[in-house]
Image (cartoon, rainbow, N blue to C red; front, top):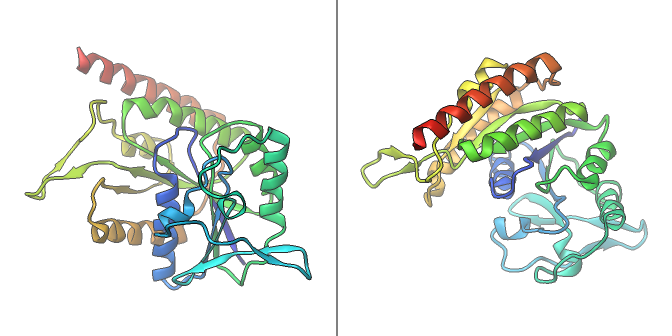
Length: 265
């Protein structure tokens, strides 16, 4: 049975698209058949993360009036950029975006897959709510992607609250751009914002931390980390968050945020 994973974060710039592609490739290396769906209609960049210079032409099966994904190195993928190009601003109203998203989920002829990974937009809008509603009963779980910074932790709380309300199972959390590696092989934190230990936050409340991905141009290092993450995703037992769990999490994150502010002064 195909497992549908949604890569999500209400914060932009956390690296959801690169995570979608790297996780897909890692699952493929592990022997699984993988499809990728770019559900971010207003900023569809999945094709670039796959190393393509421009979005491929939209494949259509005229007999069944359905879409066909394109194939890149054994991965099957679909992006709305194939429909309207990569440069135009998408000024669709929300009902139009929701209709397009539902068609992407419903009207695609996928080959036989083990995993379908959806790259979602950074939003709690009606579009995102409709996305999870459209997947209700068919979603295996969400993979959360965040940076371990004090700026991101507030968005982590909001994301978890949204996920809880929509009753979406959580597969785990990936700490992306978690550190840099110096020429001497030493780890260091590259941003002005203080580093927050998301691993501790997750560990205290039973949310699996799937891995820490460094900010590095060395793809081999990233691949090795995602190979470990992929195995944890395969072995995961997604959990639905409870109010008591979130209440404790809010207190922990509030304490971490206060500490980080104090450190600045």
